[in-house]
Image 1: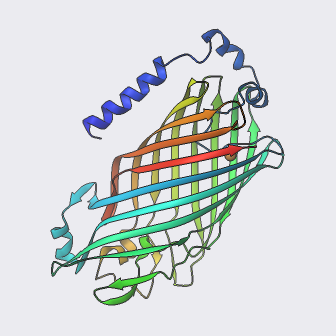
Image 2: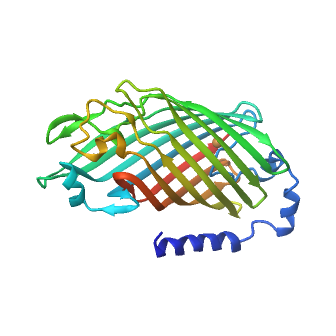
Image 3: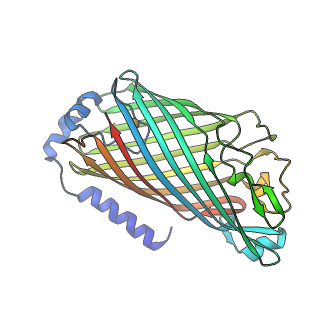
Length: 344
Ligand SMILES: [Cu+2]
């Protein structure tokens, strides 16, 4: 992690620990003995926003989120490699990719302990390349991604401590047949430019969440498991996500969250027969896996009362602290999320 990133994260942590008191500290201990339901009734606006969460029976939530994820430069393992280096082994090297997503999520509290969720992503990806001959070209793909149906089940522990189980399926609604023009004519796009996995995917996870009036904290572990092979004879690698996080209410209308997350994903099993792995590393099924440690800072703004009550606006930045990639593979520069959600 660079010096500037470390200083920025320390400043955020300092703000969390010494920031304005939303309520007198004396109240804090009383809240340790309250149930989740009573907490939400008192506060109106929950601050367990960084993770899997539960809605009371009959409550809806709609969330729109925009994500941009630029990737620039290649890595082999933890080391950066130059484009010239990549071109010694391949005729074409990717130099940059930007993945943008518009996501609409709908959640509904079926009971006080069971929340159902639909997640609909719309993906726009663009990848820049350089050839050995020195020319450059860009390919684009956009469309609906894989729609997920999820269930979150709440198991209260004691007072403000909870465990939430999540399970669901990701449907193969995103295309794996995206094509675009290249110097060699219209070609099938490689694995990272396709819009979906092409397989039915099982999603499973578990979250621990603790919450008092001014703080929420937790840890989670989630996995995405590919069920079988898609119509092009491959399956994307499984993904594993784990994180620890903390959120601090700053005022009644804002909160600051910090998260440290690990993302691990496997290589592609099988191979798409339309791709030539000797041409470009993005077409090689054995150069897709990796591991990344991310730090994330999120600011939330609540509207606590009035006719726009129970809305939250958020902005966050994810900065990778460490990346180790089966490569050459493009490395993540950062991720930014911007969003709005409404509970009613
Ligand atoms: Cu929700």
